Image (cartoon, rainbow, N blue to C red; front, top):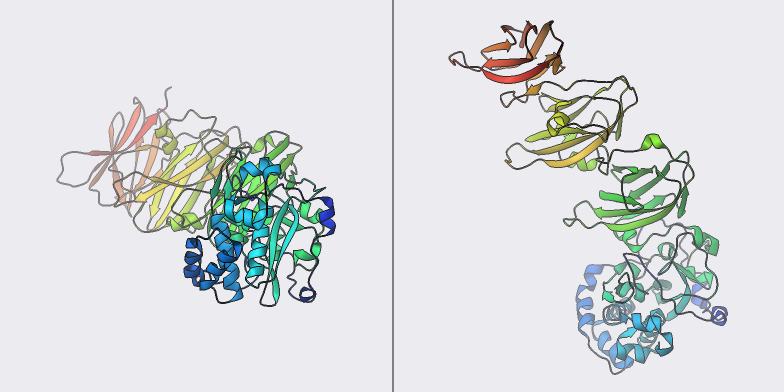
Length: 566
């Protein structure tokens, strides 16, 4: 059976148990040749060197051949453009994968189904037995040694961790090329069926042409273990326990996944998964259909995911991936696990605004956030204060906001608990939390030269367990407050009443600075700082105002402080 819901699936045309005893044995040519080792050595997805670009003309030709009257005539037409044995196999493979559709009606009513090669050719339909039989006969006519193999497959109806008993459920082929045997599956190379298993769609899959045996064994277990073409061979128990990697996993350049078993047990409420890959890849995940209960971080060559289910029992975990340079938003499912959770870690209940992946990565570097002071996704603070610094790429304007499930912060206040400090090409985000709990620090950016909106880049998780924490917001700033100005004191946007308050501000290109409370208090300039005191008696608000030019007669507001009520 072809892929279904992004997953390779098998035909369940059952071969009788007697057929299992008559499974093709190894020809003598095979007994001493080509036994790749298991596990996969990450060298190539295929069992022999294949240059797909060299096949482009042949592939295009094979797709256009339209012969249905006899298998012999079809092979004769295909071989007109094929010289080597590899080219002959390729032409036959391409024709079958693009002209024989999976017979969803025949699958449900096998008594009406014929898998004879001529019937498959003339109807243009079959299930796996017919695909493999037609492939075998076409190779035979072309003078290529080919075997039809049967066995178990992790296909349609497969459940993670299940055992396999009884009759075989799938058929595929082995071909002899360049003194070695190679594996392929034209059923799974041809296309996919829909969720309801009523409609087939041609969707070519290159992965199943001459697949490396150490990858093929992932979802094909032949009746005769010698046809694994591996040394050592895997036992059926190994096959049942091993993680299922579908073709998307390898075609996206992913290499390994840990753990390698399909079922994961949590330890103290936590389960971890990691993936290694060849190049920068974007990932996302779903645990029971949502990405709320995990912490995914991108690595240069992969990702790490910590899962904290908030209910005991069995949970389906799916991991999706796409190439970093892919323009479309489509992520493909590359892994599925079952997470068995015995106990829940309630402390690891993440805010709903937390977006995956979490923390800085190669992706945020590409967006211009370099050399982060906190490379980890979680920032722990005991006193409710923390700061994060980056080196910024050129022409980048930053916006940051703070989010929590337990806060009724307005959009303005979400930003005012974060203060930006710019020093050259460095930015510091100084954070004062309004209370204890888990917070999301969301970071947005845009080009300064771009008048458009800010784009979301990434987020951190900030945790604080100290219930006495209660920091007020930073003072409100106005448009005249320049990016490279800095407040040294007072940092709190809420000033005590009836007190003398010390001010120290770093501002340049300013003629005069005034602090307006009940009375006006001028600040004096010394070594690049504007300093002075003001008294908060008799006022509810305090403003910092500046004369940008000594000749101007008016002041511009740059900062606003609130004063505590008595």
